[in-house]
Length: 417
Image (cartoon, rainbow, N blue to C red; front, side, top):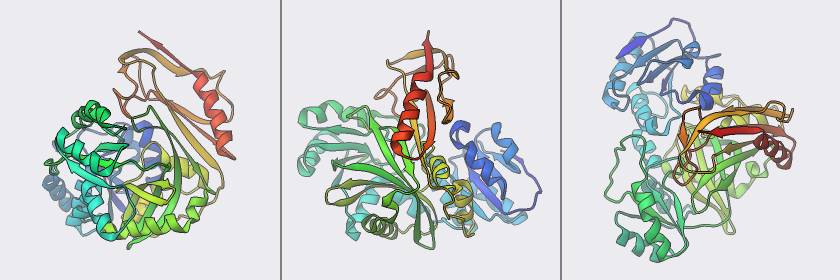
């Protein structure tokens, strides 16, 4: 374990895992303007250093007791005001550390209830929250019996993964037999510590538009900030290929959705922090898909910032430290993101970039994720991790953003080996 620290005076925020620069730097940049940040991670920070006042390199970042002990030592020397984590694989450990320090969002059982989707379903069933019917299973035979109960089409999903890994729709018995191994064998980047007696969920397939809501929660009161309208691709797999956030989205004031959002958090016992909640807008009303105890991925909080002017990094840091966040919108725009993929499995990238001459002048930003020398595949071989680039647009409407993103897609130039 290696530790470096600084002395600048400001609220001290402990961050568990930093994430990829292309997706998370905007958060660190804004948080560092008002908070001291100490990072716990498995490697020496690189790009993060300019935003940090200290860091600890742990041999095992998934070692909760070791993390808690280091945090306690730090806390005794210089009080920590809050703990924050936006990496799904670490949020449970972050809650444990926060609990050991007596800070907000410090109940690991609550975070586990969110991470383990079977526990989520059980808690919401007890509370009478509208959601798809769901049955945990282990074997193909159990899955076949469960699908007969919930009906076809059905959804297969791992009970503790994220980023839509392992999620697939099946329309009949034949497809379930064919696709069950896809869900069963989809790997997670690291070991999960929850019961794997029945690691797969067979769920009712609810039709409608799927949306996500990023919210801050303080003392159990949920304040929704951004609604993202999902763009899905590569059926029957659940790849999210884009999102649109409208500052004036009517869902932000929809009474049925707001009631479902608050009731869901109350039923799960989530009191403090940031959540990313997904609903299906069905004909009978909103149905809860899942709740994640962290900021949304896919740059959704950044889209929210561009659309509304609300700074998600500062808001999340304030809530983690028990401070009032500034969540008053100052802008009224629409922002959208689109992710790009190669066409064929196992494509070896020779070069990748956007032709500046062909990019629309109204584009907000573009970024490449893949690098020359990488070998990448589109879904289903690579769910989420097969993205090679993305573009972000801001406009007055979703069609405006869509047109700009279409032009950006035409400007992406990829050559393969």
